[in-house]
Length: 332
Image (tube, rainbow, N blue to C red; front, top):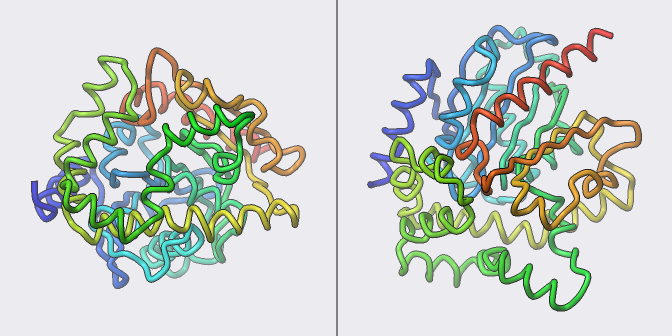
């Protein structure tokens, strides 16, 4: 599937979900509904996808979220149909996403915009960055991070050389993709769509029903279609390069200066995979302000990295209950 066809399929899907599609002046592709109806009690949900997918990854979750919830779903800069930024560090990417959202809001409503960030994989890392740095004109009421631990933790955490070797083997793409020029040439030669599908299958779980959902509605062809573009491959590698440099330094500086997540945090993760390597009841504690509530939920039954696609019903139930709790706490 060509990239233009992939974008057409994605656009059609969001149209069928009742979403408006926009490609703005900065060439950020996004989909939205209800942006004129947000309030403190009905904040905008900002859904940020991960690697190597696009906004299409939320297609199964969205119908299960609150039917009146305002939602904004971008293609990350450089991914899907969006143009890459000059710098693909998480702060620049996060700022670009919220700038794109701000441009779509009625000007009279731009002074105080309540949002909830929900991110998967690289999108979760962008959400983490924004939750610490903030963005003018937006009030972040909560953050949901799907299937990640802090970037710094993932680079550092190994009790022994054997554990480190095992981790690096499993996360080989982190150092590989960070070598932008080499990785771009090799993936392009191998075939971007083939690489994309192999990585998704490698990180997916073993739940048969979950795999069927993950592959539903031609998702592999859509993601592969985008990844057949060399500029998408290169931009995603730039993303990982910053994950090994700029983003890592920023996180370490945050920890030294005591800058942490100050909003209620929901962690959703694959219990049998990343959940078997990290204790999610504690792994984020040092990254969150004292007294801030952390809720965590492991997706079991062999569900893998792509929880929003492999287990959308369970993910939606957890997210909806958490969002409802945020509203109840705000009224206390």
